[in-house]
Image 1 (cartoon, one colour):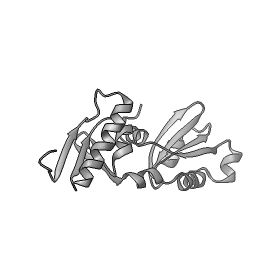
Image 2: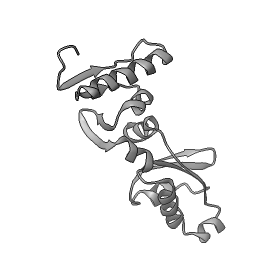
Image 3: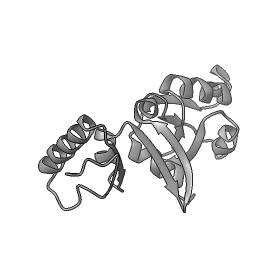
Length: 161
């Protein structure tokens, strides 16, 4: 970095460092390079690490760009919705909902991933379930929370099982 590049590409910059030093190192490197007005591209599989220092994220899957977004917006507009439901067709019922990413059957219910705020995703699922009629049939939204970048990545790229 001594020659003050306009662009610096770092591949797995924290690999092999203990968590405390890795965090300190990344924060210092980013602060130093930003002070020099250097753009930094991190290539890493450690999404927790990237989420702490990145302002924008690009997710590639099998050589294709599948997501490009500001980290703050991802935090605000990505969520996991837990649904209690005996229905086996909930995945199909949610398939056409805006922002729907994935549904996984778990513990007698469903874990749904959305590219929408928790409140908006919850509202969309409740509408798909039929509101209070859905509750009468044993299907109800139990919780909706923001999810991490790593959880979103897995939902976007993992094959259905």
